[in-house]
Length: 348
Image (tube, rainbow, N blue to C red; front, side):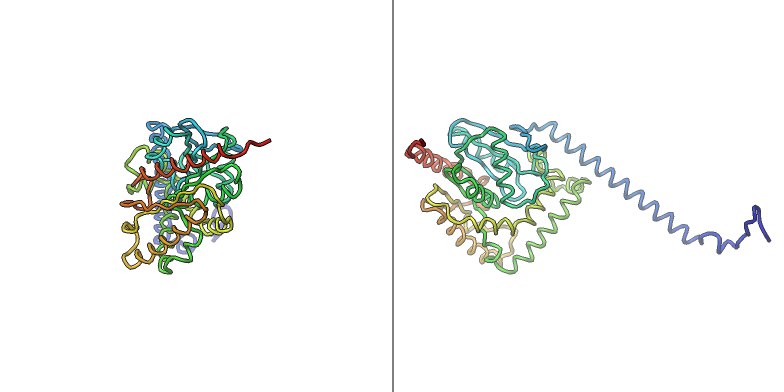
């Protein structure tokens, strides 16, 4: 029988959802709304926490405008050549805080944050060593920091400074490699290490995509040191660390193609073989360390004036465990660079 306005009444079982289906739909909507609220809350928590950390821990140095984005650089001291400090994968300028104040007593010294790290804005360019070297050169020019430079690179930063020297050889008067990466390490480390590298990349992926919602901060994965936390506990730094990790093989290939440093003053500092990484299981620590020792020796032969020092009682972060040795090495290379400058014939 026709109903109002010509609509036929249908049985409840046909015209409306069953009770269980309606209940399930309501539960899903509630869960979705709850998840969105949690994510929103986490996003607000992260942004408020970052702003608070930075408000109470002032950034040293300055921000330099570079093609519409800002990069952070901190220069102290006076003199020439200027020492440029380049940190390891995912690390900020802070990794040099035990070294920079002492070098500032000897000459001008600058630490900086690569694009996307610390206080520097992210970059859409690939995060390879060559791009990083080019961006560092542009930063130094924009900041008015003239050559010559003594370049200091830790870990992956060793790729950056070697590529910088290959691109701008006339501007570099010396180099210090602090437990620096070797272009062939991926092929010369034990094959089992590849599985661990996959695990490290998954951890970096988790940090990169959970950081915007404050999850690493809630899990206590941020540093207790407020200065470190202000600079490094943020989502763009997590994304940059992941991008650098993914670009690592390409950066290695680019560095391998740079060749010799000629007679450039070069100091290579290598960690104590008796202090392998605590992240490595015992069965991998020994062969990995043996391969690393051999590659560190090879780095010292990049220049006819290269030297190597083993940093006793130090792990991979020599600038933190044994800053005295890093300071001493930089001092020696600066003096050699100055001697080279004074001996060089004047340009017409």
